[in-house]
Amino acid sequence: MIPSEIYDYSRVKRLDQIKRDKDVRHITRAIYPGFHCPLFTATNVFVSIEKLAILIIGTEECTYYTKCQKETKGKNKIFSLVFDKHDITFGFSKGVISAVKKIKDYKEFEALALITTCVVELIGEELSSIIDEINKDKSFTVLLVKTNHYQTDTPTIGLEDGLKALFTIMEKQKRIDGTVNILGPRQDGFERSELATILMKKGITINTRIPDKSTLQTIRSAPSAQLNIVTNYSALGIAQKMKDEFGVEYIYFDSFSDPNRIKRCYEDLQRILKIEIKAEIDELFNKILSEMKRIEPYSQNKSFIIAMPPMFSFELSSFLCKIGMKPLWLQTLGLKANDEEYAKEILSFGFNPKICRAINTVPLDAVFHTEKPDVYFSGGMHTYNAKNEPGVITLHKELMGRGFEIPLKILNRLSCYFEKETEL
Image 1: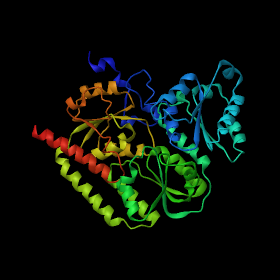
Image 2: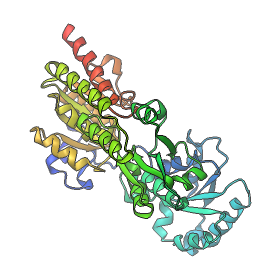
Image 3: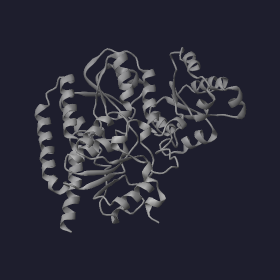
């Protein structure tokens, strides 16, 4: 049986048909919930912050499995409030107040992230007023994050809402020029990135990295920074709240691969921070343009599918179009941030790929064998042996860091592959 007889490819829309998030569909009619429930991603926002406890409210399954995931295992800061039939019927506000008081009495925590799950939102229990009352005690702050999975088809909302909740902790500060905050998860090794190196050479100090390298105190004092650098689209919400409330400007500097986008980010840095980096940036920019020109004879008319990483598929695809490659399928988490801009760029090249929702690797792997692209960008979750499959490329390491180093690593990876193919 061929894949097209198993999976309903007709339900998947092309790029020019994507007008809203719901237009991005799964390949299968069976609803697949994405990487994880938003509970998973929301919990990960808070798990590394010292003196911040986590209280998960919901069923036994939700509260138990959250403690078992590798990111939280062994952390003595995650508490559970498990519903019974009485709570669902008559409410549980007294139980919440009692649980918060017990956690507060431990004395080792100064704040609490209260995370609700699907059943809480289904029965409509009002927690905001309860938390407002608790927060009258300024010595202990309670944050509220709702992770009702039944209303969303992507786990990233947990990241976005978790980060926005940290705004509750922040306080107005005196501005310190020459300092920046790095806003966005998964920034391991950021201090070794091209962006960090340039900032440090110009005497710019990183105030805090939220949430990965932060404490309650550094979050509280985050508004003292001159600038917020948003390194992941999930942090755009908290950046906007900080701008509205505290007047802290921000620039969006994600894992971009397009050199023009990266150059504009550096130019914004130079303007806001009043540093002189034009010479360095021009040199790096011209190096990327040279590499793009060098690889184009090999990459011209080469087709590709992006299975992973789905959070960058539109922006990455636009960049690959600029070296003559042709997108066939793109897997994505849905419309986010500036995806409409990137989609217009792809369409401007005359390409109209199919767009499917992440993450469902098996049917997309079937597409790989049906479409036979020249390059299949996989995320290591490829169900076939990647070593034995021609054209399968992973980009985990290439998308680490920040700045021109990303497109340079991508071009180097593609160059090695194309040159090897030419030799065969």
